[in-house]
Image (cartoon, rainbow, N blue to C red; front, side):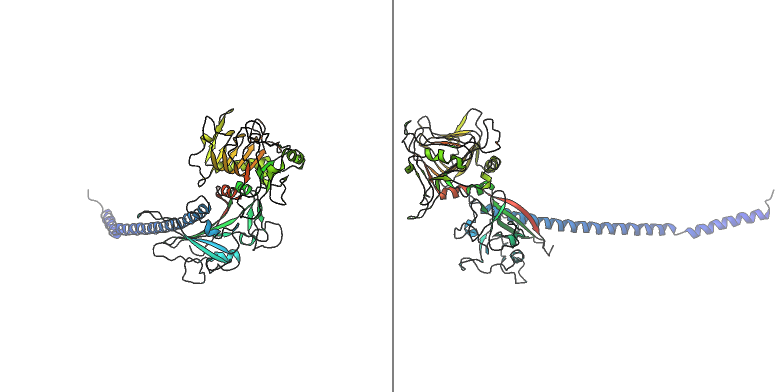
Length: 515
C-alpha cells in the first residue's frame, strides 16, 4: 500500500533538517579544543609566574637569612675574642692602653673584607661607601670617629683588627659579615635610664654587678661590677641583602663578684670564726695574711685589708684571734682586720648560690666526689699552669694536700669548693679560692713551704644536708698548721676574672633601608 504524499514530504524534510543541523555543528569540536588549549595555556602561564614568584621569594628569604646569620656570626666572633683566654683576643683593640674600662668615644672594629675588597665603616659621608657605619651616629648622637687611636691620644678614635672568619679552604668561605663594632654602653646609646634620673647620660659608661646595670661616675669603674659593652655587626650578601644585629654583653655575674675583693681573706656571714696558727703540729708557727698588693709598683703601697668580716658583731672575735698583729698586714690607713662591704651578689645565700652556678657553668673541670669521700689535687688537670690557669669546681670536700711522699703541688686559677677545703701549707695556689657552701677552710695540716697568692673567700650558705640557708651562717677559717700564708695579688685576681667569658644580656636587630 503506497504511503501518502504528505508523509513522504515530512520524512524528507526531517532528513534535510537533520543534515542542516549536522552541517551547522561542524567546527564546534575545534572551537572547544581551542578554548581548552587557551585555558590550559592560561593556567600554565599562571603556574609558571607563581613558580617564578616563589623562587624569587625563596631566593630573597634565603639571602636575607644568609645575611642575618652572617651578622650573628660576626657578633659571636666579637664576643668570643673579647675573652682573654681566646688565642686571638682583641683586648688590645678594646683597651689599647690597658685601661680599666673602655671610654666613651673609643671604637674597636673587626673588619672582614672579601678578596680585593675595601671595607671602611668610618667614612659615612661617602655615598659610594656601601659599608659605612651610619648606625653609630643614631646611637651616640655624634659621628663615628674619623681617626685611629694610634694617632689620637684621647677618644673619640677607633682601632681595627682583622677578622678570623675566613676558613682555610679553597672551597669553603667564612661568614660574609663586613664589620663588627665594639663600644662601651651609656644610657644615651642604649636608650635606657638606669639611675632613675631625668638626665640622658652619654658620658659615663654602664657597668653590671651580676644583678643590674649601674652608672659609673667621674671616669672611674664601679666597684664590684664589670663594664657593659655593645657589639654591632653588619653583613651584606653578594645578592645585596643587608642585616645589622646587636648584642649587649658583660662578663658573667660571677666575674663581677670577682672584680673587687675587699680583703685578702674575706669571712662572709654571721658568727664567723677565725683560728690563727698555734705553732704546733709541726708547723712553722706562722700563717701571715697580707693585704698589701704584691703587684703594686715598686716604692708604692696599695692593697686591701688582710682579713675582712661582714658582720660587725664578729669584729671582736676575729680581731682577738688575729694575733700577733705583725702576721696580718695591710697598706697604711687600711685596717689590718676590719668590717668590709660586698656586692649584692655576695650578701645572701641565694646570691652566692647563683655565683656557684655561674662559676660551675664555665668551669674547665667539675669534680663530684662520692658522699663521705674527698677529691684531691691528683684529680686536677695536668695542663694547669701559670700561663694556662683554669677554673676547677669541687662539689664536696677537697684535699689540697700532697700525701704518700708526693712533691708539693701548685695550682693556678679559680678553685671553688662547696664542702670543706683541707689545705696543706706546703702547697701553693695562684689565683682565687672560694669556699662557698659548708664554708669551712681547714688549714690544720702541718707544713710551711707553700703560699696562696691572690685571695680567699669563705661563706656558709648550706646546712649539713646541703639545703640553702635563709641567711648566711658561720663561715670558718683555721690556719693552725703554719705556712707562708695568703698574699694578696691584684694581677692574679684579674687573671682569674679573665677566665670567665662575656655573656649576652640582650639582642636586637636594627632595621636597614635596603633589603
